[in-house]
Length: 236
Image (cartoon, rainbow, N blue to C red; front, side, top):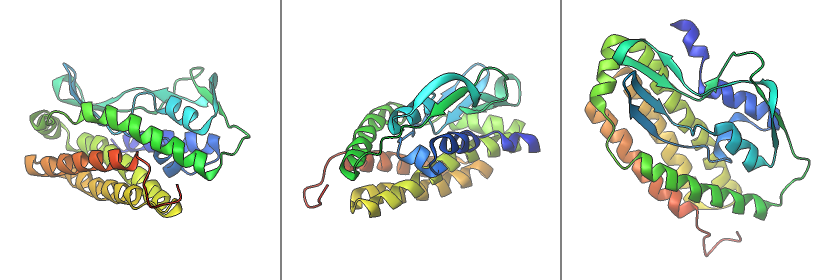
């Protein structure tokens, strides 16, 4: 299983960030490439903290051109285990030759106001998608079954979810300071805190821990909605 640890959304985001010339945290956070997908399927449990169209969202957020053919290969879903107790996650960095993408950065630099307005718009759009994903409580029984079959696989998959929250949280915390907006700062802090809860779930997938993590995810959703609206007492 050790080679599976190299397969992660963060490895993909590293490639996206390098192509765009920005840190990985910014590639997730500025694009607000945040999602919550927890689907029980015939094959097993699929979990993800990022949207399926991660690379498209990043390209749109940074005004980059996305074209077929290139070194960034996206594997929509990566599965560990077999039968009905497998666990999947993604999108991740893939290895298929000839099926990659190229990101060509824009040469135009937005003003601070344009950048913040774009960030708020993406926060608003992401909150709508997150609302659907967080509407129902996750199926913890499916997670427990996957953990009983292969604890290491669950640690990898849930650890990937935690990593996306940590990366987004770090960017949003810095963005809150940059734009002097305490609501963005609060959202970043929330995602940093929930990343720690998902880290705990990765090794102890207990019902109470999952419930705590999801409760904080829902709180972050509320803060995201607030951060999407322009404040009244700041310059932006």
